[in-house]
Amino acid sequence: MSALIFFVFLGAACLAVPIASAILMAALAAAATSDRVPLDLLVQQMVAQVQSFPLIAIPFFMLTGSLMMGGKLGQAIVGVLTALVGRWHGGPAQVSVLSSTLFGGVSGSAVADASAIGSLLMPWHRRLGYPMPFSAASLASAATIDIIIPPSIPMILYALSSNASIAALFYAGVLPGLLLCGGFMTACWYVGRRDNLPRETAPADKAAFRRNLVLSLPAIALPVMIVVFLRFGIATPTEVAVLSTLFSGAVSALLYHDLSWKRLHHAILEAGLATGVVLLVIMASAAIGWLLTFDQMPQNIALWVQQNVSTKWVVIALMNVMMLFIGMFIDLPAAVLLLTPVFLPLAQSIGMDPVQLGIMMVVNLAIGLYTPPVGTTLFITSSLAKVKVGQTVRAMGPFYLVALIVLAIVSYVPASILR
Image (cartoon, rainbow, N blue to C red; front, side):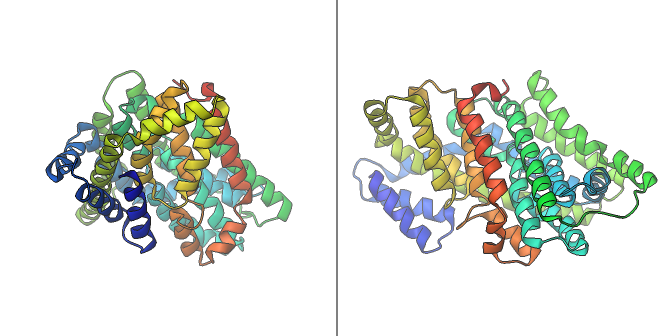
């Protein structure tokens, strides 16, 4: 049954069937050809998976990102960061990295980050005469910091599949996210200095800097509020998501005065559609996960590894290689939901904490977002920069190196995961 699931899914994916539909087709094919799996029980498993209170956090975090970054806040953040680092070597690209890091504390969506920040920064980079492939590369990689810095939608999905604490995952993602931010900024500085890339030369406007700094404070306060509320048990992740939406709405209406009925309607519609896609993937993945568990595939993999691989670091390396490979082809939410039931027993067999596995998985799959052939942020930023994907990939070298170093730290140094 597991082999049939794999081949049907692979065939549907090769035919460019949407990922959720491909997963569902594989599950239905396996159930229809087995006399051990009643179809009504499979449907019950799919429906039960989305009857989860923590899932309510997903649309609210998406709505928070739309409300905060759809108005004046994004422009204020870019203005502040340009004044701070725009004159350094690689400064314009470092603005992309820092903007994505701050945006990561608001939305939790790499795709939203790449679209919103890219639309703000790409015209500026083009006016400076910046090499657009490198501009696209810096933003495509930095946008994935969004799904590591809390809040993180993939971490919520992982927690749903593994029963790990969402609060623990959010807190554990802070340091790896900051390591990626620092590493990507260093890569931008190195390339900027090596190639003598253009920098911002206009005189600094101190009054504009102070004004933008005040306007940017809510973007800095929101992720701090999320971490503090979760760390000290003031609110649950779902309650924090609702509070963050109320906070972003109040800030947009009272501080920025840019919350119109039209923008609110657009933000709600956008968050609703995105949530619908995620829920469909969750339901389809729940069917696959239940069938694989019913077929004892995860337990068999864990048993095979225990019998044939005796060294813990080799097991971790094998998991990383598999995740990196799968992340190149499968969209991140689906990959998290499909891989968690497979790797969780394996991680437990070598004594790895589920929270560490979750962070390792998200970092792995984040790399897949800017790796061909199915790199979502890679395609978005290349399109915004109006360059070929191959040109962007060639400029990605330093960012791949940084990401793999951080992945190694997360995988082999458990102390790098804040608890």
